[in-house]
Length: 152
Image 1 (spheres, one colour):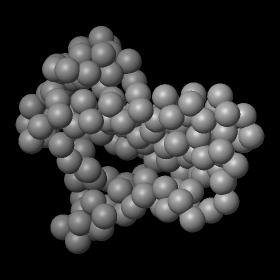
Image 2: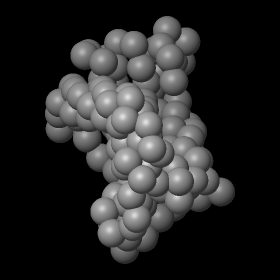
Image 3: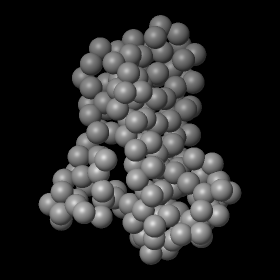
Image 4: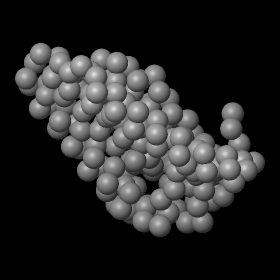
């Protein structure tokens, strides 16, 4: 397991590049890959786009709520509990999964949906776990109370 505290500045820089690229890769694959919009069901295109839109709105709302606390690697000096953070601890990660899943259902890309299940979801679960570990170390009982009162 990676210990975020012991990473060099070069390793931190690389993670700040690699993690966002993990979300960009399936978008590039979907763009250039074959499309079977809605897997042949027109209704699935609209369902997928709706999920994608909800994901983007959640993602943007979370980033807006974070403000200057937004970072790829975990760690903070303050706990953000406003906006969507009143309900979810990790709305950015939820938004990413909803956005990508919705888009890939809409364009009918099985390989990209597999990528979400095999790479994106585990990556987000790992990121959430690492973030919670750091925040528990930094904020202690304050974070534990917050964690107990929110959903993933």
